[in-house]
Length: 626
Image (cartoon, rainbow, N blue to C red):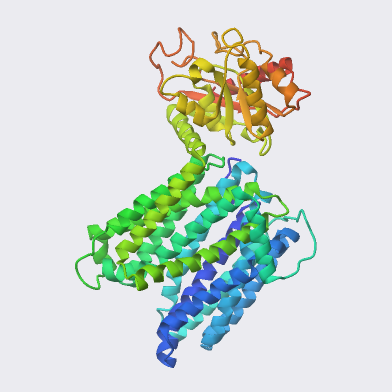
């Protein structure tokens, strides 16, 4: 698992296939727009605004018509075969486009733009639905991060290359464009040949019903509230992104006082920001689905968006890029827009991963198709939003971008309200990474779905935080009621989902109530963690397990995941050399190892077996510390 994803056969060929496709899409789209603007319009007297809007509509329309069909195809067919067929469609389209560019057949190019949009609409559902078949759940966030990085870098490079290709003399430009379009499509076809098989879990016939199919996939996603919320969240990102990128040329002209090169510079800052945010998301998530990054990403978009909107109009007129780069105001614009992109990367990767994780194998591509449909609708809404504010209400560009930041702020607040525990869990994870040098093993032994019990040795008062932060799923945990009711910390324990338990001597019926709450959590499909020793170790060794595990399993027969901690004995939060918290910390960021073992069935998980297994895992954890 330590190798880079880009060196693995189950990911690298697909990555380059989709990245080359995104690159070719953007070379073709931008070349077409430049040819229409600077060749077709002067030659034929066509209306520039009409042509540009027609081109945009021709590219978006296939997503409304064919996304549902593409989702059904991806669910019914082997995704490897479908990818290869779609890359052949791209190659055929680009061969025709090369001929149309050479012979300057502009109306044919517009028709081929529709074909390219169709290929993209059909490829979209495969793009994200194939990843869960080729990557384990602990690698999904990294896989999505790389896909997003590849997509946005490809968009940037394709846009820049289109400008370079059209800058040559007429004959050379036509030849260079034709060779590039066909050559990149051919490379994509070759890369697709190495994509491993991804057979369908629900093979069958596919019928094309554009309207009924679209309604059906949207209805299916609506019936799964968590998935639908994630799809709306993703579409809101594309709404904001479309608004930013659509108005960026006008901002550069009227506020930055620059030209096309300044637009490319700011576009590059945004695209690289999204890619960097995606990779930062993978780094912070450490193999987990970290939904706490969603509201944080939205809030970063909001803060950076307000900073971008407040940038003053630069002095001068028609400034070159070299003149703008040394202007402090332009650097502020660049940094703010890059941070908007970073926030977008942090925001969108967990949402894509959530859709993949929550969707069943036989319907995952259709959920991605529903996402593409919503994305297209929100892009249309973005165009209408821009027309309303800038043309009808005639607000300034600064006010327009401030509106976008306000929308991002609202999204962040709503996301935080819906799932505050996810943000808390992320904060706990970051805190434990700051306090300790952590080493993990076996986190994939925690079931991806359904109820489970995690049992671990109890070394210090930080154990629950370390285990909760390391787990790929959110954990409920039992804790002593006096600690649970601590003034100033009770709100934290409630938000974290702690389950208080007290001794029968202090609270008759307290254990029964705690067991009932554990049972409710397990029946709701949650993961519950407990320390079967019932108290902190006083000598660093595993103590005898009490009967709590047996009581829980008699009520709810769920898998049990044994785990063991090493490295916290001797810390100031343990009972080593005196009571916890009565001594000063002796080491800064000590090394701590946490090892999860294979899940045991309820029949195997008796007290003696679990205790022996935890002792074995403790030795394994100690070996990891050297």
